[in-house]
Image (cartoon, rainbow, N blue to C red; front, side):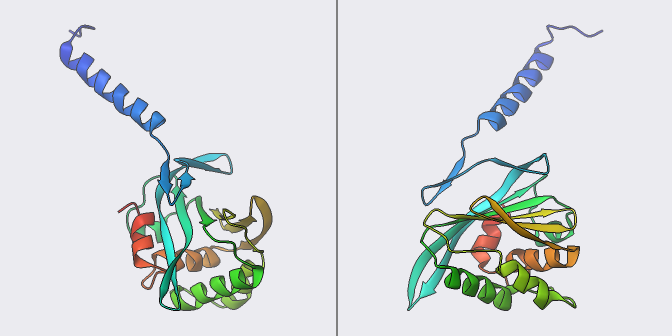
Length: 195
């Protein structure tokens, strides 16, 4: 016979309620003064922050803080394999800590693709160039957003949709930038995996 006053049941219910409230009221993460929301929305689906981190680049032997990257997924993805096999949707936000002229934005994306992509396919160069052309100059605090939804990659520059690249192959290449065998930055890979 069940009793509504069972102390074990009451404690279990209170414990579960505590964690639900904690997840709802959890404060947003902050990196380098950039507030990173705990959720994002892609095609009406709420995604949760999988992880976030800082990207630095070395210019004339001086490390420069370039941007804060955040990665959103429907459920936690804690390994390279989990990310590369996930159907998504997914969202990446790159919030820039420095003003960046358009030519430098294009060169930075080009260098990242050349140095880190571990998955290519026939037509990759064409898709890569189309992707890079979607991004313009960025002011300090400017945000580039990349959404992977079904088999389309959509690119936003400061909140404005600039275009899309069709195909799951390009998504695999883009994901290999961050989570492949030679990621853009190993510590950023780990941070975006929530490790």
